[in-house]
Structure formats: C-alpha cells, structure tokens
Length: 310
Length: 228
Image (cartoon, rainbow over all chains, first blue to last red; front, side):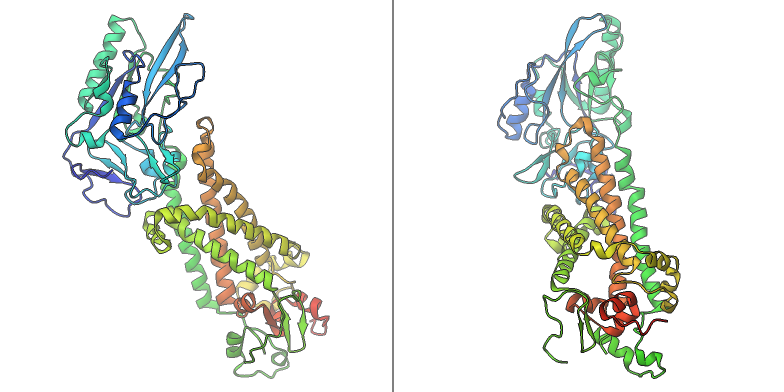
C-alpha cells in the first residue's frame, strides 16, 4: 500500500533516482522482540490478522506448539516454537515471533525488477506496493529470511508491512499493541537498540544468562526488527534465524556486474554484426555464367529481390 | 512473377524442380521455425524487461509487467516444444562432419566473404549447426532453471541455494542464446541473401544452393560437374 505521508529512501527496479529519494524526515523506526519474555500466546498473530483484514487459516498439527510451518501471504506474523536442549540436558521452549525483518539493505528490493514494487521509506520500513508488483518472485530469491510469499489468486507478493499504515499516522504496529507481556516494543531504532542492550545486560548480570545478546545483523545493514536472544551465538535454534544473514552474493552479482557484462555483450554483438556488414557486406550468389566470364549487370539486384532465383 | 508455386507443401526438402528451384525447407519446417521465432521473441522482450530497469518499458509493449510475467513462462514452454520439434526434424542434418571441422578452421574466409577458399558443405554449415545445438542445450537449461524460478517458493528453504542456482543458470543461458540469436538474425537477413526468403517461401535457386551449400546441391541434384 502506498503511503504518501512517508518519504522514500529507495525503490525497486527503477531507472535513475527515485522520486523524493533520500529526503530525510522521519527517524528510523524499530520493533524490539524480547524472546526471553515471550510466552507464545499468539496474540500478535491475531492482532496482525485483524488489522490487516485476514481470517485464520487451518493449522497443521506436527506434535508441537507450532501451528503452521511458516508465514503465508495472508499470515505475516507467526510464532516459531522450538524445543531446545540446554548444555545441561534440560529442555527449554524457545519462542520467536517471525515476520519481515525490514532490513536496512533489503535483498527483496535488490532483486525486484518491477519499477516501484518495493519501497524503503526513510523511517526504515520496507513495503511491497502490490499495484506495481508483477508477481515474479525474485524477492523470494533475494530475501535471506524467506519472508515474501506469493498470492496465487492476485499473483502478487505479500509480507509484513510493519503496519506502515498505522505507523505513518503515529500509531504503533498492531502486534505491539496486543502483546500482554510487554515483550514487544516499538520506537526509534536508537531507543530500541538501547533498550535491547539494557535488557541483554540485565539478563547477563542479574539472571546468569551469559550468552544473552541483541540480534541486529550487520550483514544486511542492521534490521528494523531486532531481537533479544538468550543465546545470541545460536540464533539458528530459534526456528532458523540465520546467524549471518546477507543478500546472497549471486543476487548481488546478478543485479550488479552481471547486468553490465550482459548489456555490454548484447550491445557488442549488435555493434559487431553492424560493423561486419559495413566492412564486408552481403554474400553474393555465384552463377554458372559468372564463372564462365559472362557477368550480367543486374544479377545482384535480382538476387536481393528474388532470394537468389535466376 | 507468377502466382503459382513451384514447390508443393508436402514434398521433402531437397526436391529439385526443372525451373532451377530446390526445396530448402518443407512447410512444416517453416511453420515450426516461425513458431519458435515468435515465442522466442516474446520471451526475449519480456525477459529483457525483467533483466534491467532500463529495459522495463519493454513490458509495456506486451501489455505491462504482470501480463508479461504471466505469459513469459508459458511462451517459454511453447518455445521449448518448438525447439524439441526442431530437434526431431533436423538433428540428423546437424551432426558435425569432417568437412564442418575444416570449415570451422577456415571460418575466417567465411567472415571475410572469401567463400571460394572454403570446403564445400552440406545442407547446413557448421555455424548453423552450432547455433542449433546452442539453442537446444540453451532451452534445456532455461526450462529447468525457469521451472525453478516459476515455482521458487516450492524450493524448500533447506535447499535455498537452488534458488540462486536457478537465477544464475537462467541468466547465463539466456545471454548465450541472445548472442546466438543476434548472429542468426544477421546471417539470415543481411548477410546471406536468399536465406530469409527460403525460410518463408521454402525455396532457393540452384545457384544459391551451389554457392552456399555445394555438397547438399550435389547430393540433391546429382550434379558433380562443377567440382573444382
């Protein structure tokens, strides 16, 4: 959805500078998820569905608390439950609210070929503009978190918007509003990082959780959604949160050097055959009477018109 | 110019007519060639639109981005079918012969239009044969990688390197076919006069056949009197 009240930092698939690019107005917004106080109640899932106008989808029982394996085009926010064995052999249940991470360096936007289908606002929100989306799915290849999902009916891609429609009106995202334990926070990136670091320090110093830390991966330039994790060295345990996410180098190469190499090769090919034609010209059909030394003045012209028919 | 056709649609390629006309391509070969040409062209235009923001406007001439994206894989499938039919029609004629190897060594003379220094060759020259195999292997790679891109979400996250592989192969194979396509169109229209007419009307003159495909000419006419 297009948000006229937000200013744009960059947009996808666009030749030249984006309209209003790099106009600074908003501070960067951020969602903080404290996994140590999440109880997996799924209130945030309900709030997300309600605000965005989707209904519940059928759940899949797999002998755990997990209701479905991953987010869907109409289910942008999902708690990932993971039974985790601690070093001492005891079991803990790790819960992580999974949704779009709103990367500062978004792989989806990098991969997208459609003009203006993915927008990053100066406040950090990365949003899909379905009216410009062509449904190619390149964003799926570009995303290091496996977030964009395809709606087979409308043939458009969907994901969490960070409630851009609420945020642009000065409200917090719906999930934040619904959280009963206060494990979800929303504010400026600076404030949220500060709060997260304070909480991680508290966990380390007061609760003896030595590996507690903040997940704000530098590989994608930091994210607009950050986590406090019990064990920041093992984010994979939280339902496959990548340890060092970055835009795949293939996508970087494809959208960078490969483009120029390919374009130069294509231009070179066209230029090459043009120059060849100017230098050597077309091949002439040799006629028997030519060989016998009886050239006819108008043979060549006939060849061109009649496909070599005598 | 008379309206009646010398060649008939059902006769095989290589049929010699007393009017000095040889059937170069049957009606089926020509229909399939142009089916391939149109489907490839569609994939080329839409593919270039997805390739670069500076060529995204190309999508507009085929109905806009979403329409282009919807039809691109289907036209790709149609092109695949066409190329496989071509394989069925032409693969016997596309085997590399000893004369082809010599021709390729002397390709410099072909480029410089000094064709009299080249060995005589059959129905297709080695350049045409290489283009044929390039498109055949190219479309196999484009088909496999294209299916991966078409149903990219169906590639499980545990195998997400396959998503990157699909992108890489699709781009590389597409660029390779574009290179061949540029040369093919240039040769068929500008360079070898009569070639373009032959793939439309199906016929060439005996002089054309003798000049460009002497072995084929000798084989279909039985005339070896012009051997140097």
